[in-house]
Image (cartoon, rainbow, N blue to C red; front, side, top):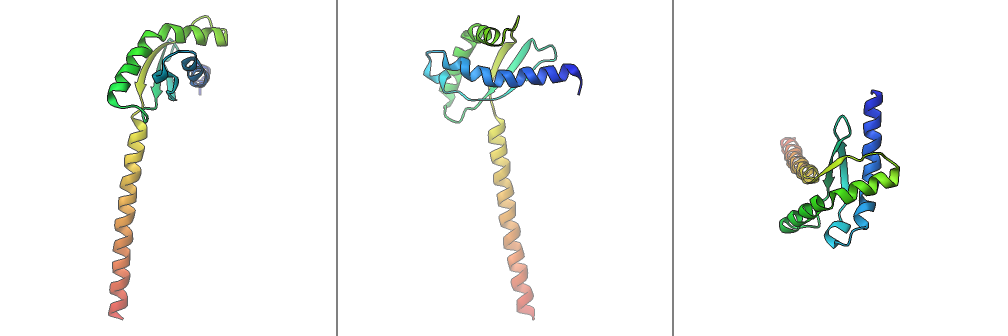
Length: 132
């Protein structure tokens, strides 16, 4: 891992902690309760993609929250700069994290496969005991 990658990962982890703190300074209930699941910075650390948990919001509320986050982006940048003493903070792009749903769906598929395999094994055991 290069020195630049280490710096980028450090900034990402700091932003994961700072952004929820910055959200709490806002008067919007939809934004205050948002959870940051991940932050990915560009190579130059000038842009950051912020992934948010959407489990408590419906589609309409998600759209409203994203719209509001775009409006307060400069405030969030200033909060991060002041908190860390940075000269500049990345420009934030917000998205809702689809990965949590993907993981849940894959886990359900594994459970289905395990259930089918256990039924198959049970029927094979029964067949082998019937033959003896």
